[in-house]
Image (cartoon, rainbow, N blue to C red; front, side):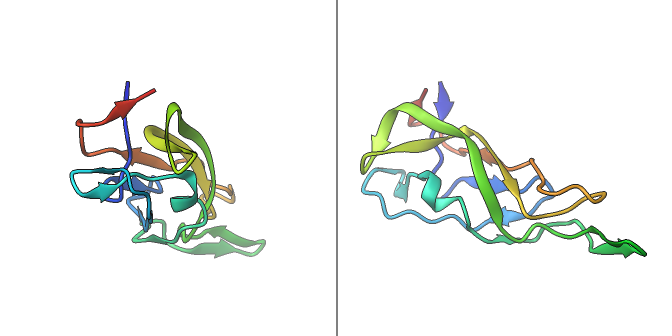
Length: 119
């Protein structure tokens, strides 16, 4: 079983940047609404530690600013508002660039709670 992500969970880009998650679901854990894919995908990222860099060919690195896609982590059985809740098995990409590689595939989540788990 995996931990269910909430608005109090730590969702990061992999370079210490924090994703600004959102949710208006009625299902809550410890007073924090559970996250759906829509509350992560497209959200902004603050504090990414990747410094911008470039060479003669153009940009070689840029900090993550937005979640580009969510590719993993939905629960198979637990839903809120008809949508699967997101688990701490979260995977996805950001718009950041490191060594001319984009998208970055280090999106991750730490539930920060053990009261509600799912698979």
